[in-house]
Image (tube, rainbow, N blue to C red):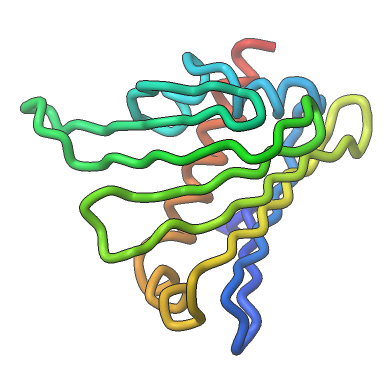
Length: 155
């Protein structure tokens, strides 16, 4: 099955360009990134904090069935333009990866479809390439598939 979330990694660049078209109106796609209850569902994580404003911060945490924390991530929102753009840092705690910078752009295609474009900038090409060796591509595609399904149920 073809992955709907496309990842472009140009040789020698320390960035990824990720694009996905959704069968969702722009407003609902954007809402899926800013409503803690919806984020928690499609990301499969607990939203500790999500301050959707310039200089706001966010924090997510995932636990295993026994309650042990297995993933923690946090960052600061640098720019927040409703239904247009979110610029934020992303840092995984207890990981060899330093913080990265993410530019999320939301675009209306038609009244019922929209596009998300994410540009992620890593500290180095080597770190970006290391991330690509992980099951990152399939993970983000699965998360975006869940986003589509969950928001369709709300629609």
